[in-house]
Image (tube, rainbow, N blue to C red; front, top):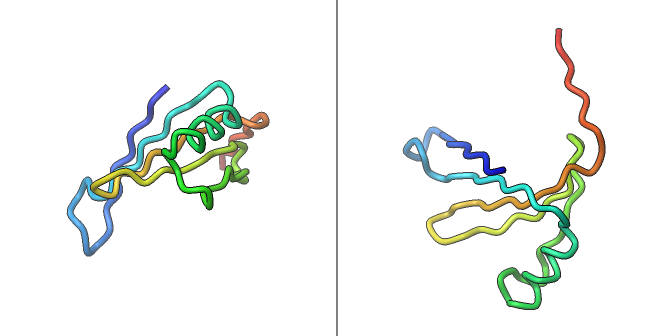
Amino acid sequence: MVIFYLCHENYQQLGQPINVRIMVDDIEQFYQECLARFAIDSNTEIKIQPWGTKEVEIIAPMSVSLVFYVIDRPVTFYSN
């Protein structure tokens, strides 16, 4: 699954930066493969987010944020 988010801040044009979220089957294996191929810096970490995902972010050229993730636990959606 690929989800595109366009971010807008008052000092940038719409569409800059771009955040792309890509779901993977095994975030730990993906992370190790990226490290082995020097696709990411060794300081990059897998982060556990409060909304229920484990993810790793790679900043590509032109400030494109690629976030690879797995759903770590069931996500509860709240409504008013």
